[in-house]
Image (tube, rainbow, N blue to C red):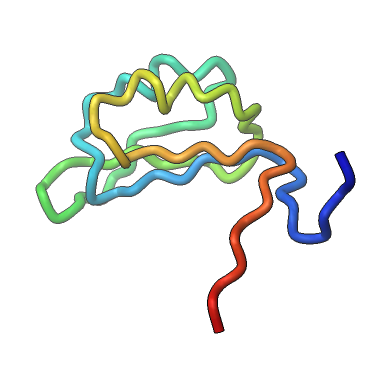
Length: 86
């Protein structure tokens, strides 16, 4: 695989805070403990999960245990984001 200059060099996770229902399953399942319960509330009154900003291995366990479709997105190393249409 050739390295693209826009490719993600380290895996990371993105939490859609408004979709999160504070069940905590992702936090418990994360093998590297990079997820946490935030103090702030989302629009539905739940404490959404947060990501510490580094240390994600891209395993995807958080994605698979989450009962809310679209709440968690895992970007693995080598992912190339689509270019925005001008």
